[in-house]
Image (cartoon, rainbow, N blue to C red; front, side, top):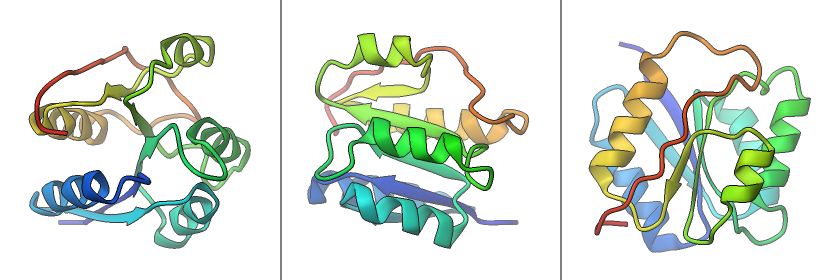
Length: 140
């Protein structure tokens, strides 16, 4: 089984570590974390990410800027992105037609369900959109 490389971009160390551990407990998933927007772009390219789980409010380059840069680069434009944030960004997400979103706090089962659905879906064309998923729960 091929391991799916997942990059978790989250500046809250406790959340990043928890998400990484939960994902790494799933056979076939290999998650790494990065806490700063500028470093995220290099790590995403370096590990050849299959999925990016991206906080929006980051130091330096925010999640929307990372998303835009990934979208502008042929080598990364196909990588699915699952956004997460505690702050209300629904208007900006809709404006950008970004559909994969977890609202913090979210249930870890919802996270795993979203990740599994992304990997089960057919390969994306650059920046393909799906349905909006806003999840709530006590865990993260």
